[in-house]
Amino acid sequence: MLREKSLEWFGVLTAIAYSMLVASNTGNEVLGFTLLFISAIAIGVWSFSFKHYGMLFLQIFYAAAGVIGVMRWL
Image (cartoon, rainbow, N blue to C red; front, side, top):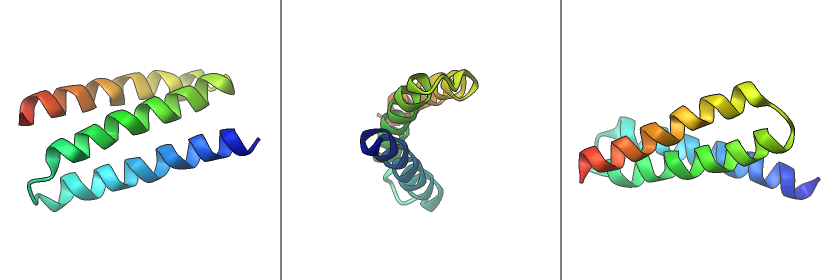
């Protein structure tokens, strides 16, 4: 149970950090989009584990956005 909660909250906190980095427009976009990708993987694993397939589907798109964001900013 602790592992699942840890994975969920790790994903949430990295998503918050991503949002703040990208919104701040301080030149940390690559780090921000990397955090988005990491967050999507963490929440994707969590959602798959608990059969939240709608959330899993959304995380696939967030992961893709993270990859595109990093590639675009490099």
